[in-house]
Structures are given as C-alpha cells and as structure tokens.
Length: 296
Image: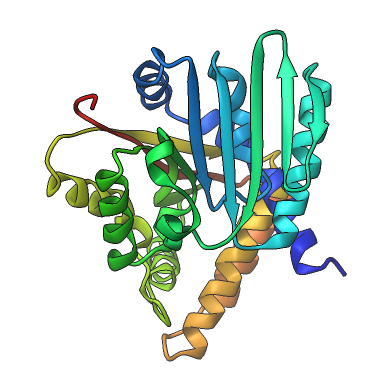
C-alpha cells in the first residue's frame, strides 16, 4: 500500500500537466511584465509541495533569481529537492548543492533555491520579507479561513510583496450531466468549507474573498481570471484521484449527519462511466495577480 507521502507525491505529479494547461496566460503575463525591469528577482513560494511552481515559472523569468520554497511537510521538501535537481540537470544547469539549498547556473543566469521547513502563516518570523518581490502559491488559498487569508493579505501589503496565486477552486461539473450531480457536488463543497480547528475554510469563496481583502487595502492592482482543468475520458488516473477525494469527503459528511441516501449509487455510476470512458469533468479555478500600484 502506498504511504501518505507516496500518495501526495503521486497526486501532485499527476495534476501537474492539468495545472500547466489551466494557468491563465493573461494573469501570468501581468506578473512577468511587473517584474521585467529587475535584474534579479527574489521569490517566496508558499505551500511549495514538491516544487511545481518553481519548475513552471523559473525559465519564464529571464533574470537571475532567488527562491525560497516554504513547506511544512519535510518529506515534500525532500521530494522537491530531488525533483528540482532532476529538472535542473535536464535543462542544462550546472548544480552546486548546499546543506539547505541548490545553486544553479546556466550561461549568465544564476538561481538559488532555499528549502525552508515552516508554516507560511508565520512568514514574518521566517524571512526578512522586505528583501523579496513576489509570493507565489498554487492550490493553497482555498484551504484557508477568512482570518488566515486576511492576515496574509495584510502581510503582503505591508511588505509591498506582489502575489501570484493560481488554481484556487471555484466550481466543478461532470458530463454527461446527472440530475444528482448538483446535490453531491454541493455537499462536497460544503465539506471544503466545514468547520475545522483553525476555523472555516473558504473553499469556492476564496478568490472573491481575496479580492475583498485587497480592495480594503489602498494602492493594489489586481487581475483575476479563470483557469480550468478539462479532464477527458482517457484521463483515467486523474479521474480516479478526484473521485477518491470526492468519495472520502462525502462519506465524512454523511457520517456527520448529512443524508447519504443514494450516495453509493451515484459514486458507482461515476465509476462505471469512467470504466467505459464516458466521463468528463470540468473544474474551474481562478488565478490572480496582485501588485503594489507604485514603486517605492
């Protein structure tokens, strides 16, 4: 049986190509343009996982770079280091390993990547934020509560950090349409927003609330646009991962008092459609780029 870390790594690897296809080009272009005049950029990647944001973005920036990958799970950080080493080798970088960093060089461009174990909710304690230009996060903010997101927004604003946050969940829909889909997807989204020890996660309300947070802060520029996973019948492994998440979430909700009548039948119908390659799924996210309105 796979371990939790093996499952997490498998899931992050599987979703990567869908994330790449989904990212909104207008939001990405706004971020690249904002940083284009700097000879070096310093970036904090929060909830970094196995380093997908770095792998996707590093070659899009022509400048030398310093990245700090902040991740609470040390096993994922170890996976990130191995993954980035393989990526750098495949892309022609010379690599100098450090104790908690990688130093990469290709032609005149140098990239330093630091691996930092810690909670990104404590960023001011972890790093001198005034030294950085950009924070990146992917599929992270929809897991947070209002208080958490508001505190992060204030931290970024105070330290004049631009923010590129991608793949924040908004909605999902299956094809062919089943009349029961609306009920079960609604309950799945209610599970996202269930009360937890830290509070109530925002789930599909994340992007709208993030806009509200920055609207209260003076001088921010914000661009928000959709990013969509389109999962086709042949994408069996991605379907299986997502159905497993949905199934686990729905059974947790039924254990906690919500009606589970007809749930098994609904899940079995989806699995049969997957088996016969009839199942499609569209998952809508939002990408946002937020930056200070002036240089200072």
